[in-house]
Image (tube, rainbow, N blue to C red; front, top):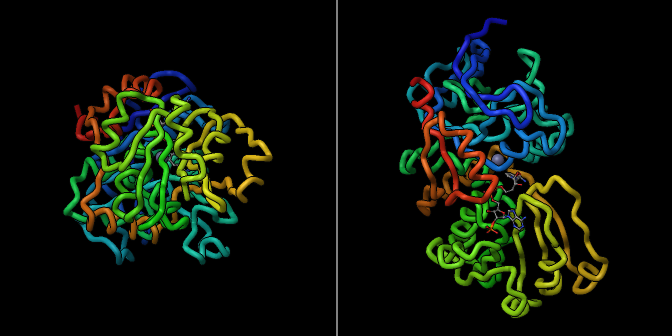
Length: 351
Ligand code: NAP
Ligand code: ZN
């Protein structure tokens, strides 16, 4: 298959610094678009994976799945996009299209295994897919999103993963007027979830381990925010919460949060702590509580989410960096030192 060589930033091995490298992108198939990557967010999932915390990372590894850019070329049969259009690519770049999940617009649960934008088997070129820390991205038009031009492009990039990952469960579990919704972990996902749950009409309570985020959470729109390490304050929320969205990236005690639920309430995990979490029987049997999870969202829902965020003018709070600062950014993300999402200005790759 014909390919083009493009510049990218990636790493050769787990826990080794990222550096400039050349990668191959396929020449356009009839339904492919090529986009120039303008901005790419840095998600904690990129960090988990370049450290190979889940196992299964294939090197060289090019991260990046919060990709926004401009369409530069389209394949002969492309209908959805034309050259010059704004475009976004998130986690999903292919799926079988035939299974029950795909037919239900839940490609993220595809029976045959979804193809992710990075570190998934590349059906066309062999090897693995390379993510958005690169000059260009090539993708079937059906997995590319229209990015509303009213949104600031750099701040919109994190919506392609963080945005949909919190939108989908908040909608599914009906966060809205009259609901007490807790957000646990105020990082890239959590800070967008505050804005999102508020826009849906919920009463939002933030649980954070960081003192500096208590007041900031209110600036972001939370109705209440407390330090989760303060047992006295935590007690006040016992049996008060309908839903708690858990975005924490490391091992933590979920029983504490299950015990804050009203009867029939749910703690929904979207964070991906590499180690298993323990659940005490009484945390779920008392109050018929649910502990569940959610994974990104399908393509149609991702478009719906972008349009919803544009309507409510919601984007991420970002720190824009050059690609040459990416290793420092990963170190800071590891320490929780970012308010609240790093986004790479990919023009810096040309330097
Ligand atoms: P992030 O920006 O690093 O935020 C994670 C937050 O979790 C931190 O800001 C911190 O919030 C809290 N936290 C971290 N370590 C903690 C600990 N040991 N105990 C308690 N709280 C802790 O990460 P992110 O990009 O938002 O991603 C969050 C998680 O979601 C990651 O595991 C990521 O891989 C996963 N993820 C899942 C999906 C999905 O589809 N399911 C999609 C994207 C990302 P406070 O300072 O407020 O306590
Ligand atoms: Zn992500």
